[in-house]
Image 1 (spheres, rainbow, N blue to C red):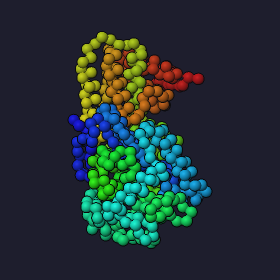
Image 2 (cartoon, one colour):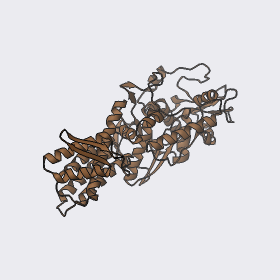
Image 3 (spheres, rainbow, N blue to C red):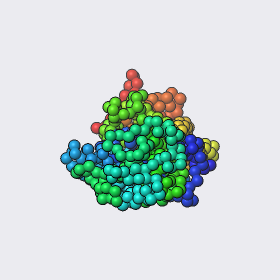
Image 4 (cartoon, rainbow, N blue to C red):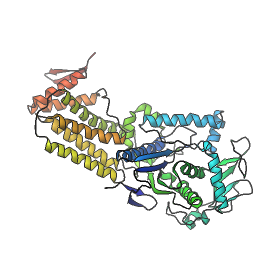
Length: 468
């Protein structure tokens, strides 16, 4: 089955057909770098990195572009507040972003274009729009795009031009002809960072930058354009209008948008003061747990964040890793036999097929994670049997590794057993002894011994302590 993507443009799931066989061109809107990123910025970074990973797992060659907006009003204000120039501010927060998302398991993009490095292309793009009659220079040196002259404006957000017009206003200081018109170029105020152009010394508007960078690095039409749900309108709507007006071709064949993050059941908002910085979260929690949490809900749905939910996610991921390492321990213990493995191998193959089916269906990581739990559960059942074979143990491990790797979760290094893991293993050992499954009981004892966990059988039950 081909990969199906829910296309915001058509509001339907569509089979993915790349522009070039075996290749995917993908543009993801990156952050405006005036501060450290919050977890709302981290979600699309993780989600679309996972989409990229799955395409690569399926054999596609992915060109992945994520831009940085490194000049705008917020960056200019941050530079004033920090008594630095705008380049220093942008460099500081780009470095911080790259460090944060790398810690969260995000692969480096193929290209990370910056607005300030694409000025010539942006100016030419704007001039082409003026020449085609879709844009105009205002008296004050600003340049505006005319949405009314672009047939189909509103098709991404599914709004009519009249609906959009009713909510549009001309702000103080703007010289546009129509409230719907949006800025392609802004004349600079005194002492602001600016570039020479045919119209004024100024800088690009927000929307034009992505159109110019996508064209430069991916071409006039791309496979997938992605970003947060909040970018659907006006940012992505305006990108479509200016790109298709200039190029005369569809801008992107598939539009993907991830849902919002709520904090304790309230929408995250800086105005409410309830946003959480990604770097603070990374300091307090295992980054892999954060990533696993972000993928535990389908990317198009809102996700509710709380520290309690994050702790529950940690316990869930620990269970999966414990199952993996229990399998490894059984392999290393050389307690393997020549037994008929076909039934188990067929069952494990079905898990892989289910995983592919769920990920092919609009990258359903939530259901993929449910399959992980099913695999871990079956692996534990298999480990309780008195006779096991290396091929089945390895097949279980490979199935767990496959899904975790596509999700961007590392399984390579075994971590120190946590108290709750130890208690769970002791409880499992007790149950095994009750069932007279002494082989499994001894195996758990040996595993704990390897981890320097000392067990003491007392009349009150089993006590444990860590070795010195």
